[in-house]
Amino acid sequence: MAGSDENNPGVIGTSHLQGGLPATGQNRRALGTINRDVLGCPPFPCAVKKRPLSERNEISNKIPSTHVHRPITRSEVCCEIANKQQIKTQVIKESVLPVPVPNEPDDCTVIDSDDPKASKELDVQMFVQQAEAMSEEIDRMEVEMEDIDEEPFLDIDNCDKNNPLAVVEYIDDLYKFYRKAECISLVPPNYMSQQCDINERMRAILIDWLIEVHYKFELMGETLYLTVNIIDRFLSAHQVVRKKLQLVGITAVLIACKYEEVSVPVVEDLILISDKAYDRREVLDMERLMINTLQFNLSFPTPYVFMRRFLKAAQSNRKLELLSFFMIELCLVEYEMLKFPPSLLAAAAIFTAQCTIDG
Image (cartoon, rainbow, N blue to C red; front, side):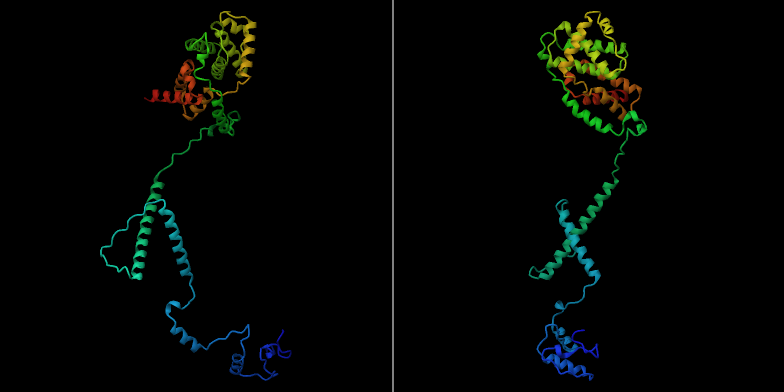
């Protein structure tokens, strides 16, 4: 060790002190002599001059008690942190909750405004009262919020989780897409003003007849609603004379059957049901014209897809289902219903049926 005696490693050599002392070898000096020598020398950068205990006590007695430094305990630190957190919480809550007015004390004491100590005690007292009042208000609000029971969410697809045809994993995404696509497929509600030879009443007669054709051929529900959608979109884009309106109807049935049905009716059956008013070539030519006019866009949602979903959500029975579909079929006939989206028509039909059955 540098600065130590080679023979006595525990003895620090004095040659490194400024104003070095002569080496004494094995002779040890008294501690008082060493202190006097060190204190008498110029201060060494690493040396600390310490006063005797008696002198330190005299100096500490002269200093006011407020300036005496003492070790901070763990409890004081925790209290300080808690006070800061409470002040921070109060500042945040005062911006949301009204500050309650503290109750006046029973014994009104006159406080001198010039006394800073008394003013500080009053501020602390008011702060404590406000904090307690706000804490009680927050606890009361939390209790009230806990008392409100949220309505349990009914999972209507729980019974179909094992059915691969129900596509439960994709059903929510499918109907989100339907809600967006129905806005694109909406027909202008005043397209009849562009037609010169037909009107709303002729459209209603045609759709009413097609509903009977649909039931006679025992077609699927999707086919009827797609047929009406094809007719309206075609009439909104192309002018048709009165004698060709029924041809447009049976051709729309043929196109919808090719899109939805497994077994498609033959063209001769459609001609027969129209009392042979048209021949095969006219039907095929009209089919080509309608497909090109619609640009092969046939995948638009109809009220039927929303009806099935909403009836499932309503936990419907057979009676409610029949009444709901009866009302939505009445909406298909009415020209004024074109201004409503398919999802709204389906929801309104089911709600009206529920009110009718339940009174």
